[in-house]
Image (cartoon, rainbow, N blue to C red; front, side, top):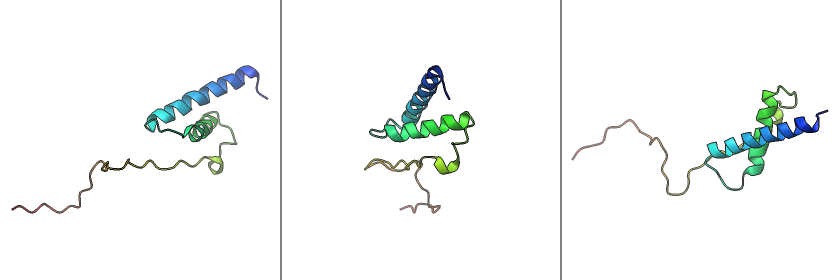
Length: 84
């Protein structure tokens, strides 16, 4: 069982990691719960906890570009452009 000091430390680490994930993902709105779960899992892995198995890892949705934005880098189909 954890002491209250250890629980506070763990919560602070999770909050810092969730914030880092939020920043890395471009500060998306409304995904705080997902970021918190991802952070909990990452901290558990760091701490070597058995509960952090792959089966319990939260699933992150892929990031999609906003409407009107092109992909980067642009795809090159390998054919030279025709001149003239």
